[in-house]
Amino acid sequence: MDPQIAAVLVPLLGWAVHGSVLAHRLASARRDPLTGLHTRAGWTARAEHCIRRHPAAAVLLVDLDHFKNLNDTHGHAAGDAALATTADRLRTWCGGHGTAGRLGGDEFVAVVQNLAAVDLDALIAALHRPLHYAGRSLPLAASVGVCRLAELPVPMLTDALAAADAAMYAAKGRGRRGSRLSH
Image: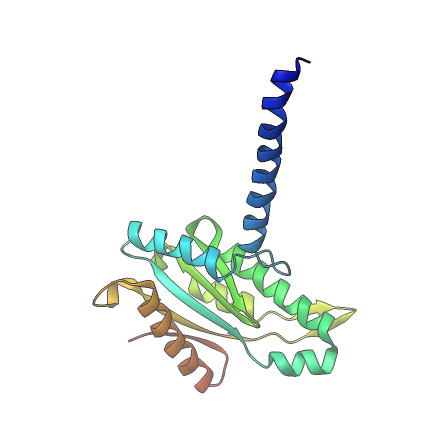
């Protein structure tokens, strides 16, 4: 190879490899390593895009009930399995209608394009199916808060999350097994 061409190509190749590594790191940073769901940053970008495009969008906040007890009783591996299973169930429920994410700990979030197009009761049922782990059936339960963007004076993600959070805590107060729409 001509030395002048090599002098130009080697730095370009280096920058291409560097760019690829950075892109991979950025993509990894936007995915939760345990569940494969979007992290808060990755989910937020997708949720804001969904909200802008779909006026009938809804935001859901999901919190596992009695997670600390499950983790303390059956071990952290069982807790990790519960988190991964919850993520799979939420991702499956969202399907092509929305995006799921993990905020951290045992808190999950989702945005769907149109709440009427998905079956909220099916999500609640899925989140309450037992976890089969190490030959045992472990109980899973979750509280879900829902906010329809159309019910907000200004359809902003931060307000939707706050309303879904309030609805989720109201659901917890009603016995921790179900969902609640914001009002």
